[in-house]
Amino acid sequence: MGSVKLFGGIEGGGTKFNCIVGTSPNDIRREARFPTTTPNETLDEAIRFFQQAEADFGNLAALGIACFGPLDVTPASPTFGFILPTTKPHWSNFNVLGKLKSAFDIPIALDTDVNGAAFGEWTWGAAQGLDTFIYLTIGTGVGGGAMVNGKLLHGLLHPEMGHIRIPHDIQRDPYEGWCPFHKDCFEGLASGPAMEARWGQKAETLPPNHPAWDLEAHYIALALANFIVTLSPQRIILGGGVSTQKFIFPMIRQKVVEILNGYVQSPAVNEKIDEYIVPPALGARSGVLGAIALAQKV
Ligand code: ADP
Ligand code: ZN
Image (cartoon, rainbow, N blue to C red):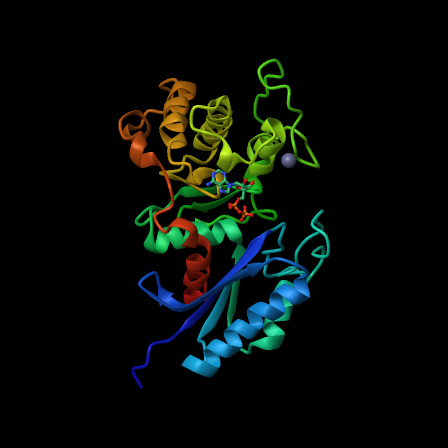
């Protein structure tokens, strides 16, 4: 009848859930966010939001969920759509996809939060036209989504880019690191909570001239250099709470160029680094809009 098909998108984060109904960044019909508590309570709230939207706008064509992990994203797996064992209380082995399926008899797309954000940026944002790039979040956790040769990367489980090991100079930075599994992996050294534990104050309260930022840019640049030489991304998008500090972008870019030391022979790195390491074009909505984009493809 010519009516527009509406989609639902969920970005399931470790601290909050974002939900939207719409078709694109320019057509968001309704939006809500609420804290992540227990899985049943949190998903019930999301389900009520979409049921109300269906009552008001008509049935949704499909749902997409971009969810924190570790998450089983292998369709053939018996636990597809489950949260895998995690230190996050209550969520281990919870069937996120099953819970949504029991409430909505429509196609439901699922991927990690960071792959969702990558897909949102590819569809409408800073990665349009690329086929190989990464989206990294630096927030409560550190994680990365990747598209490789036009497809979102899953592999064995899904990448865990926050847990790579990077050089940690104990003389310069005696802080032991935050990760419960590895202590001083990338996330253990560079996440928001790591900054807070190291400096005794929240990252958002550290002024631009504080030494915290040079160290933070150093760790991020080391990690990006590793991703550049392993995945050969055509662009790197840096999202998450810590990356909202725009002044760290020039610091990170300069350090990446120094660390690579001329080895990667591309103008993207050597001449146009300002366009190579960039913030998300969709701001804080990359993930939830990515969930809509995933739903449109399912
Ligand atoms: P989440 O990762 O939980 O989805 P965020 O991406 O906002 O949420 O990350 C939260 C972390 O980022 C916290 O450790 C917080 O201190 C830090 N953070 C949030 N906003 C800022 C900011 N504007 N500047 C620096 N750090 C921030
Ligand atoms: Zn780790």
